[in-house]
Length: 306
Image (cartoon, rainbow, N blue to C red; front, side):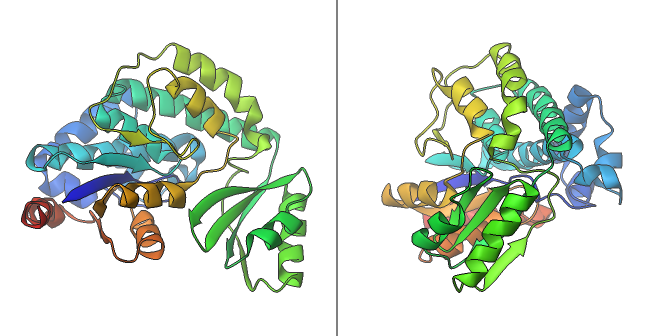
């Protein structure tokens, strides 16, 4: 049996995330507190209670990575070795740290900078995003002819996300509806991620990456951008390009399935990626770690399946 670990992207966060794990899983608490110290943040105050900061890009990104890595560290010693790891956009940083390409501390501090840079880019050049269901490639191409809108996320074979200027996304959405696409939904996001509007964040992120030590990981981590596993030689350039490039999450899932991966385990807040797996590879088993009891049952599931 082959399985892959999935790590959540931005938007998966919610008030209260990690609170039950922190109370009931000692390893989670140990790592979560250490990650907060590395960030200089009170993570329980940020994540366990209702507050506006957790919805802000500058805080949400590092909080999600800290949560995801703490869940992974809580259970990794009990699991057989995964075949691969895959994250959605931000989740790639969690995957790279979990695999060992970068230390957890370096990754968290890098993501902290990334979140601030993307928040600033979004403030300087406001934009929008919209989810689109059941559009054909031809319809998407017709709707996205203008330079100010692009397909930013290929999440499943039937779901993509548009990104660009507010006017560009509105116009593309209107065109799609005129072409008969029924489901085009504006997303509550703070910026036009994975579009050219994120270009101002690229150079400073590249500078931060240049100061980050990178080494070979223990598990292959697939890139949403290249649709191939990361390498030490190209990791920094790929993460820099990722800011303005589409994510091909569905293609990566299909590539892993073609390699014989039958089980996908999501480690992060929410279960969005689990739903993407079910819509992309219906025959696969997809499990989201949602509560401390899952940390006990997951090793049993994987070892029995093996």
